[in-house]
Image (cartoon, rainbow, N blue to C red):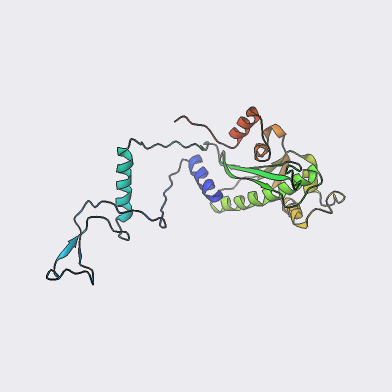
Length: 255
């Protein structure tokens, strides 16, 4: 779904048109506009009328015109029920210059039973959310620094994948930034010699240090009030929720 959202966001930002072809979804039989005849199938020929042909009443599944005929029938039927076509969506992308940005956050021992923390990240592209996640961490973090460090690694993996996907589409930007609201976690990710607080953290989470050293991404501090991923890890007041709702690129449209 992330790749689909990226393509949709890119098209909305650059005012492009998207064409979709669905070759897997089965459909019902549409009405035919032309007169089409077929020979009687082997084993179903009417005795004494073997030379007769059959007239098709419906567009048979598998024929070339079947998808189009079913779409026309569906469109006509829905229109008769009072529905109208609209270009508006509940999730709307802005028209800003395409830019890829990531936000990450975590709570501290939020799960009452296991005392594990929850990692959350929000990645936006072209002004709209293309990837978001809220998931319980696999290990228990002893400090807020550790829980944020683990969340940063998970968000980094997703942002790096989307970065590569976007570059394959021919779009690049000078800086790819992942925002975190905990300064100590940023120091831990950038400084591999910060050993006292990190020696017991699972080795796989230290992968982010190699990514930052290679300058594939940048990890920067952001104020909690501007961290859109905050809504992925905890309950928020209405004011904050509306702010983060806007950061994620979503707008409520009237029906």
